[in-house]
Length: 101
Image 1: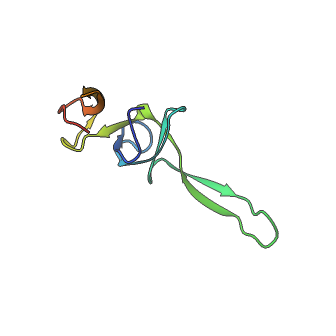
Image 2: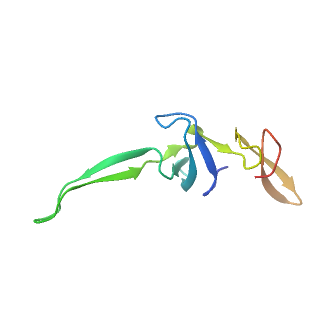
Image 3: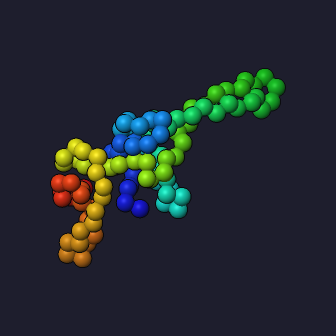
């Protein structure tokens, strides 16, 4: 997985296309990420006993990794991620400006 928690990304597909946010959680096996405050949906919950009220929760739904693009901290543009090996260490780089991420 090329994306990690805390990366700033831009959504490229879906109902929130064009919006930016930070990655909150990464699901590696499913290939999905959750972005804070984006791709929200409402969940209606029934009352679970007498005297309790039902409620409507707003939750963030995971997005596939292919629907987001990393925003490079140096050139501030959405980009793909590459890798470079420096002294036996794998480093992520921006494909546009070749800077380290």
